[in-house]
Image (cartoon, rainbow, N blue to C red):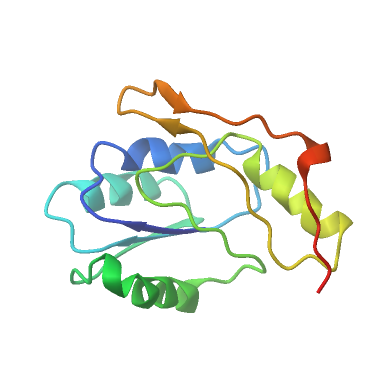
Length: 142
C-alpha cells in the first residue's frame, strides 16, 4: 500500500487505522511524507512504531506534479506482489483488501482492480456514495 501524504495531520491517523483494521491482514504500508510542514510525519511515525508492516519515509516536497517520483520511490521500498494506492487523506472500508485480493486469486488473468469511492466531508458526513454489488463488477481480458 503506497500512501503519499502532504499536510494531512487531521486525516493520516484515520487513514493508517483503516489499513490496520482491514479484514485481510497480509499487507505492507509505505507512507511517503512529501515534506509536510505540519505533524503528518510525526503522527505516522508514532503509529508505525507498533506495526512492523508500516514504513514511514520523508522526502523534500515534490508536490502533486511530480507524484510519479513519489510513487516510484515507494515502489523501490515495496516487497509485495500487488500495489494499492491510498492517499493520506483517504480511508478504506474494512473489507477492501479482502475483496480485491479475492478478485486476483479467483481470476488469475486480472492485472488491475479498482473500486468506486464515497465522498465525505471533514466530519465524515457522506456527500456522494455508491453501493457496489458483485454483479456490477466488470472483467476485461486483454
